[in-house]
Image 1 (tube, helix red, strand yellow):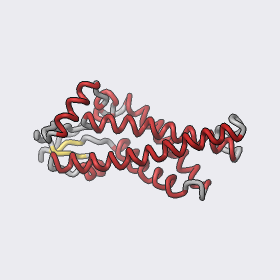
Image 2 (cartoon, one colour):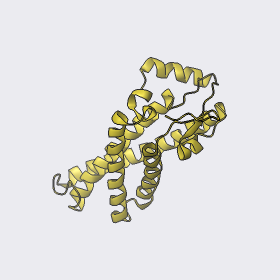
Image 3 (tube, helix red, strand yellow):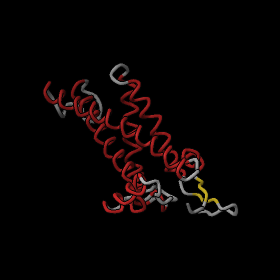
Length: 191
């Protein structure tokens, strides 16, 4: 982690930043193409899968703020943070705050279920992809389609909450969190 003379510090490493923005674009492509354009939809899903697997590994071996142990908090810490957040007295974190940690965890889990169910559905209905022919029959196709659609919509809901949380924290702590996810740099200050 590099501290700069101007009171700035590199928080988000290139792996985290590239993962984040590539995931944003990949999810957008997958969501826009949906059932209509299966080839780009499937490729976006495969890219999301690779991104998720990379991020999970990076969560154990990456830079300090990229590691899960930096942002997976106990339920009591999360509850206390939300209580302070709603009273507008939440502390500032250089990395993910407890609410952000919950969001990252939920997004990873929801996206994993989305891509696995999508691959199972693709393998069932189109006999294509890594799960081609494993699950067969109309019943399993219906089940995977329901799971895939539910978690796609749930992920979209989480994305909306995530953007809202970024806006909230940016105003609460007078910093541009979206910019810091582009540059990797945040100010070293206490709020």
